[in-house]
Length: 72
Image (cartoon, rainbow, N blue to C red; front, side, top):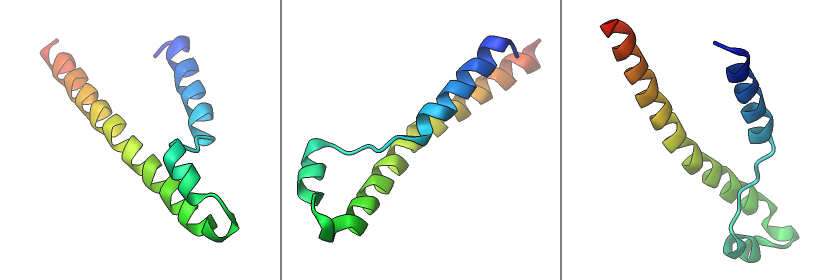
């Protein structure tokens, strides 16, 4: 793997650590001090739903990589 690949991996790790995803409607419904636990749960659920497509695409890409490597 080249230096560029390591750079992209490093950048993606740093940018993914501080992601607090929340739509405007969810934010409006969960603002206030009494909804702290519920807001944290919504944020965790959004991040969980966001991760699944990336894992699937990564697994498919890895499978294709293995197929091409085996073909050579």
